[in-house]
Amino acid sequence: MSRKQQLLKRHRRNKRVGLLLALVVLVLLGVLVAWWLPLVLAVLGWVAHEAWFADHLFYSPKDDYQYNFPPFTQQPKVHLNAGRLRLDDGVILDDGATLVLGLQVKSAWLGRFFDPVVELSGGDCPDRQTFERGVNGLRYLNLSEQGPALSRGELRLRGRFCRLLGEPTLWSFTPPELQHRRVMVIAPHADDAELAAYGLYSRADEAWIVTLTAGEIEAEHYQQMGLDRVEAARLKGRLRAWDSIAVPRWAGVPQEHCVQLGYFCLQLAAMQAAPSQPQGSREADLSDTRPLRQLNPVVLPGDTDGAPTWNNLLADLRALLLMARPEVIVLPHPTLDPHPDHLCAHHAVRQALEGLEWQPGTVLGYANHLHDNDRWPMGDAGSGIALPPCFESAGPMEPVSLPLALADQRDKAMALGMMHDLQPRAPFKRRLRRGIQRLLAGRKGSVYGENEFFRKAVRRHELFWRL
Image 1 (cartoon, one colour):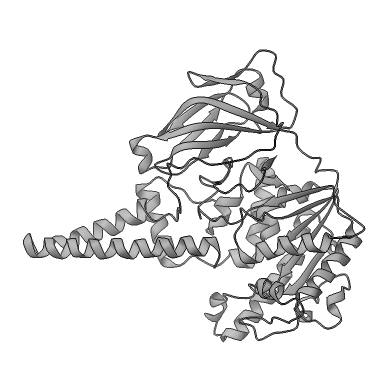
Image 2 (cartoon, helix red, strand yellow):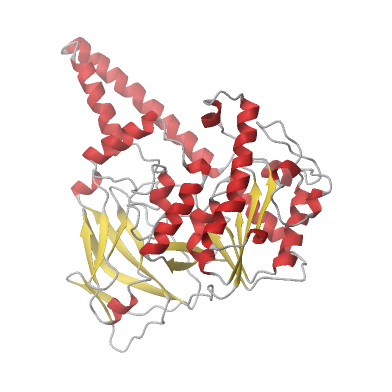
């Protein structure tokens, strides 16, 4: 069982215990006070839960984030006085550096009901970065676009529903060269490349998008059209295979650089456990990858027998790596992103590179899912991305922040909108919860689309980690 599954299991257990205790209290009130009082309190309690306690937050907001940055990282001296952040005299920031500011953020009492926000102003790139309700600990702001304002002594920090305490610490990370390189983005599913790295790969001199699985499961939306479970899964797989080839064309990636490997969703871990054993689809009644590879512009080793095995996946990746010879590889982060297919995608690429005659100069990790906080990146679409929760930093973590102009954000949103998996309406319960939160907690959706990923992914930055 993955760590996220363990956290979710514990969360649901605690929730059941809380509901049982609440039920006992309501019954006692109905017997001792008035029969109608439990009904009124139950409705009010449910509304309060949906507005303020429905987030999946699997840690205390009072916990400090625990980052371990690489040794000898530059730490320019800064001071925060009366809301203004100033560098020490004589300190010069590197152009384009990823700047991270660590400081204590303490929620005000209203910050338990409204999302605490740190507002950045004074320069040409005003920003808002959001943290957990009830926050009271060490957090990390992304100041990567604020270097000019900081150098001029004009950068101001203001807490909304929170206070900024103590003396801050600034880290400056020299960014790798990304825009004039051959880039390969590894996507476990169609849309992962766009969610994590649309801005990066759209600017690259040469980009390759390699999607590992068809993403065919959980096709209930297509069953509503009258298809049975197998037919719906096959249709969804075909559509997402098409998306993985077609949507990168919006960013100018040539079709011959877009490859769909056609392995099956949530089967990569089983493939890895038994490398020569085929693992067919859970829902589409398919055990051959070739029907989902028909749009590929290249012939790969796995095309010989179409067997969905780990050995074929490694052979396909090695062939593509030697064909593309990417200088930069972008793939899921092995500890921040807990999705089992994302974790296996990382391991597959690492294993495929072992002993290979071509090696990339830079490897970047991304996180489209988190262990501890399903809402991250917190805050509104178009705002900045603060560093995510991190409590198990096994090794040094080096962030790389890529700014996205408003035009790039809009192009990214349109690319996401073309993805069939992000188009269906959310379930009624989720839409009702969002309406309650919009009314009572001041949260906003995204103007680009209803799916939560439009809020999460269309931001001022794309955040990566050098591996």
